[in-house]
Image (cartoon, rainbow, N blue to C red; front, top):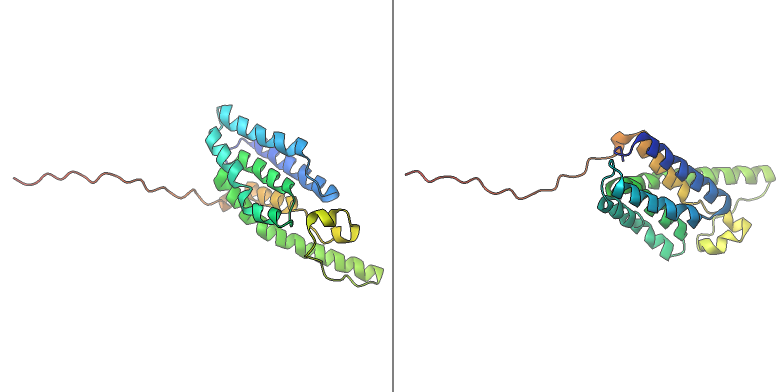
Length: 192
């Protein structure tokens, strides 16, 4: 990810923060933002002199959503999160995308911890029981029910946190493993 110019990194962070804020308020990630953002990443890497090539970008775009696909198919996450991860992958490439996802996991746990703490705090103030979260509900069922909606954290928030952590601490990104290339054995002349 450190290959991106600083202005593009700032823009990437700003768009991710906008999407996380929008998702927090509406539980929706608009296609009119995520899809052009993804296409711009593909185009920039394909044609910009600093770009790393369209293959680099396409690998990130395709790999990014794969770890999240299981959650979407089970109804625990919306398709907008997949599109957001594909857009991030288009900009940062496959290897950095894996790091963003790895950092998003602990960020999601922290978000859940703060959500529960806030929910129990609100329940104490209101003098009512907070009650357990209903995990059997899908995202689409919960979006329309304000009580159930309180049990969900938009995953764009941990995704954005993972992206920002990787930008702020680029040393956390491990170098790409060296690919072993078979080198020909040295030719040894037989003694005469």
